[in-house]
Image (cartoon, rainbow, N blue to C red):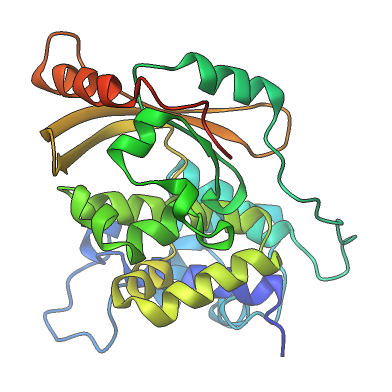
Length: 285
């Protein structure tokens, strides 16, 4: 049976209450061992001022939540902005909604021009599901030769989990990989019936235990900036600021750029990578 939007909501509610500490939610300590991790169903229902039966049916995917109930649940479960947005996305989807015909992802000309002008810093264009649509030579020098990766495997999250070289490049791999999973989970809330997304999640669920664990936790993240730490086999350690800009046209395409503080060892290392790639031809897609 195909999972329903309500079942996705129920799974998120179960995962979230398991992450909460009862005392931090204002519940009194009982002094006895708890049989469940996190909050019980009846405790969430009490905090949200709804009946236990109604909340149970929500978790079981047998009823659709109203907007007032979502508001109280968000407060009871201590959801941040990203998690609340995800909660409303899940609750607002229905099986009978019009199915959109998916078009192949094509690189926007404006993104191509931006990428071509970034000659001294690694940059990628990411599409839906974190697919890698384009890259510049410095990104190749930092990560890998993306042109040698089969197109159907050319996905940022997939490579992060399955490519030993890219995995080893990240000094804080678990942190970076978990953030990437949360970013994909955020996207999944807006398009949970995407067959390519389902295939990606299915493949990684089979291949990697960490992915299985983090995907089941249903953490979400829409952060567009951060710091990444790399250990490059040729230029050594790099500390790079990672910023991502959305195209704003609804295509889902994002420009990811990695920069270093001027005058820092990381900045010098990027200059070395740039010099090695100066004679390469125009970036390929």
